[in-house]
Length: 486
Ligand code: ARG
Image 1 (cartoon, protein in one colour):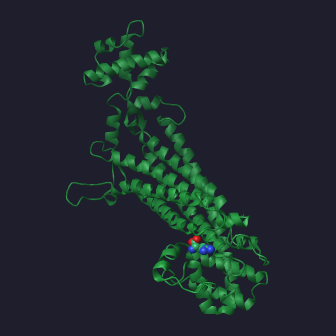
Image 2 (cartoon, protein in one colour):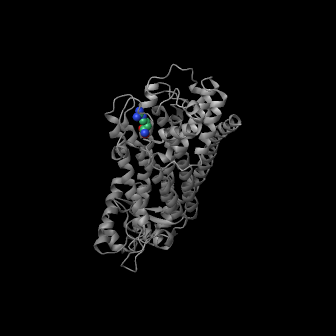
């Protein structure tokens, strides 16, 4: 349809090469709604007559119900929709729809509308998952478990503390998306191909009709920049990286060696050959899909970095990276949320491991500090205790009085008193005395949970308000469409 100055058509193979029609099904609905707002604005500014706008709006409305993914000779969804509108209304009316706009501002608009919706979906999914984590944390404020650094046993902790660490990372993801929405929610429509138009359009009016909070003002910037797209996919990559780490923890904890947790059968996979297997494929795929999303981000940045200002067709290749990132993040959040909701937690095993080995070493050292010892001396004494216990293959609480005495000199600390301290410390006492802000201490868990519950409620309210703004704009637009279609 666009080949006015070109004599020959693209052959089938070349058309497939340049066409984005198969990716564009994701933005078809936004292209239709955006075209309706644009046509109404053209009518309100006397560029279209009442009967012309009516025909166009009716034709666009019909397209909402049509499957637009089928192959045609169109290069993309913009050409396909315009062609179908012209087929229905005739050139006299439909041929005016593309007045004062270009596919360049159109695709930028569609992408922003799509990302805007995806951000809201992701934000809501994150809040759902955080809620699940906090509900589970509430049941495990006194479930002791070992904490690790370098994947070596480090300190006695609580399972709820671990779960809240996930919730907090996800809440930061939420905040990142929430902030970016403000930058995405500006309309590029009416920027034209690159330099605007001489026709009397009203960009603010289309922006308002589509629920945007403003416009991307500079027409070059509006049509050729995709920095907010990269920002969005960057956030998806960070979110997936967080989910991937959570997945890895669960993979480790669900091994027979750890057996801290057991995945529900619904979220496990069998082996084709080993009948005993219960594999964490979903978690492994979360790690694998994260790699793909990181790849998408790299693809987008690589696409943009050498591009001259003003639309270049390279930008078309960004779209699948965005769509794939969105759908991956949404599914990952939904699946992991259900996995946590059905997770079996092996409290006994966690408690037992937390009470074994040398996890209380730092607690013992801190008890010595409370007795007035310099931390460095305490560190040395407890290090010695661990060394002796390790040589005899026993835990600290199993050390005999003479073994304790071997670890400390008379002038450093009284050996008997040290023995008493060792036997008074276990996982539960350690968690009772841990009191610093944000620590694994049992009292801290309750405070952390209460605060997160409040934050979740606040964020849910903000999301409802934000979604309502878009919904009401789109409903108002639909009402206008109905009115003008009469
Ligand atoms: N299919 C194109 C895209 O997705 C639409 C814009 C094409 N613009 C152009 N001047 N060739 O980016």
